[in-house]
Amino acid sequence: MNFTPLVAALAVGLLVSGPTQADAPSYGIERLSGNVNIDDVEARLREALDERDLTLVETVDHAANAANVDLELPDTRLFLFGNPEVGTPMMQCQGSAALDLPQKMVIRQDGDQVHIEWNDPHYLSDRHGLDDCELPLDNVAGVLTEIAAQALGE
Image: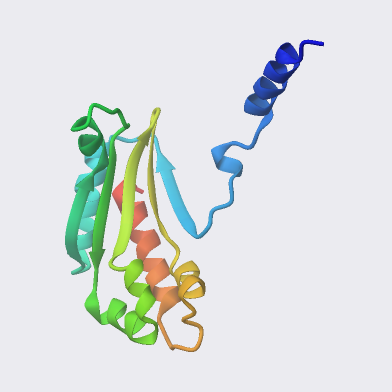
């Protein structure tokens, strides 16, 4: 018996009916999206960071890096930023928190949508075992959401 057509049909069925990105677990990733221009989002993100006296440590243009090796990637820009007064206590509590600091936000083009994504500080607290430390996680989470909303023009 030839199973090739059956295997092909099952594979297509899984691709069509499988979980979508929207259905995937968040794993501590927060996201806001909008039908906006990515260059405008970048400009507003820089303004939002500056208004809050957050230090922009570095930016990474993943699409440009991909193009440098003849690969394609939709516009994907990573921003590393922070405030040592907030990040340092997290690292003092648990040194492994340095793996996730400074804070990051990525803006990326996905069809006609631009997504802005960042790590939920409560997730980072769980990941690094920061429960025994008094940290302003709710405040940090609120500021990150405000920055993302401002970047999207909301």
